Image (cartoon, rainbow, N blue to C red; front, side, top):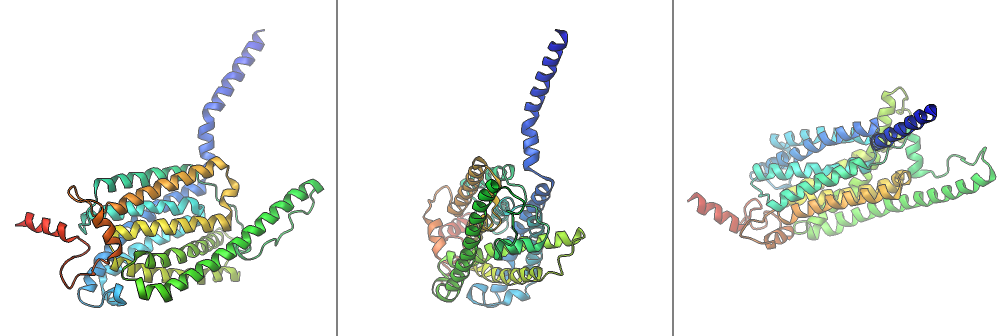
Length: 398
């Protein structure tokens, strides 16, 4: 009887200890060592990139005062040292971001770019005097909450042993025969999986073709007509091309990680093909992002670029790497809610960028359509600060 009682007590204690430790074990299972490395790299990347927006903006202003502005097609900023400081800072951040994609899925890494928006908005408030309203601070808090939600429910990184596997995901469906040595029952279900993956393959090809077509239409048709007045034109090109560049960056990062671990991936032509795509896409993004930053307010460019870029990148990752196939519906819905929370934060940052206690939302809406320097010659708007705010500053100074 005593033996039975002791065994029952020990079993109950073991079950209670296992139940109490299950949340921690499940969290550890969700946050693998690779995910933690990717998280740390993504956080450091956000700090560097957020600061680089401000430094580059200062350089673009200084270069535009003595030459043709970047928004008007000029490249005088290439001779401005301050712009190069900002570019080097951004490169450091992009390198950290590049490395993060090699360790963690894009669904985890990309949304954390919202932290760079917080850094950029705070520094713009301090250095560029682009006012951050109380609702903007609330937007920053929402970005942090949404980012935390995504981090806690992010999928584990897919185990890839060769860059050719990434190439197969993008270009060659059904390169392996998974039905070999399987029973007829399992062959039927695996066949259904192959069909589903083939559909995903076709969807990614269609997605890539659609992205490239849309980017060319924006560059050659809409930019000459609306580039100076509609912010979505410049940022649209950056976001569309950026979603493809992230897929190539992830493939190249995996190749470098495997090479450093002893499995040389430089011998495969797929590695160099991904490298070429990365170079072309990054140069295109830099060019049109410079135009957007020089033409429109930084507090507008950052959140809109983040929203479009992150949405398209997550879509591309889900199609190509099938991140959500390894998660339960609850996890997927939680990640979507976290992403919507981040979008709500960026929306607040965007809508309240020029609000003061005595002004409504109208100045914020009008500044989206009008370029920051559209009335510079008439001195009606200076550096993106509305005339009413500038008059208040001059009255306080007097």
